Picture 1 (tube, rainbow, N blue to C red):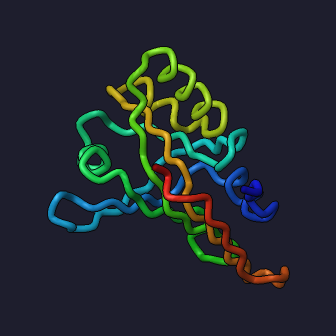
Picture 2: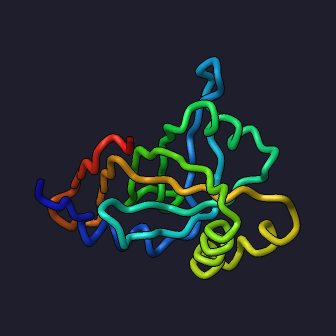
Length: 151
């Protein structure tokens, strides 16, 4: 099977921003959205995002019950943005947790206050589908890539 690559403009959006909007659902299907610090990880077959959640947060509970999530990364006024589907994996191993939090803090230094002051759980969001929309005049204005189901 040929390797699918993230379009360069989509990669640039992931590298440019430090926060994303994450959409999850509770056990009954009620949606919730929140802004979350992240770090892109693009050294595997499919891109991933590392995040940290308050260990007692509803969002983390939602992801434990249903690891599927929707993501928006871009400016508040959408001009060039990425929408993605992802599958979450909670990082349980203490060594990997520290490495993931280091990745997060290297990309999003503003997350340091959060990570150092409250109990957090590191989560890796494996991107299963990425759609770039670019209204800045670049062509093509939409690029989409499927990376698989995340199973």
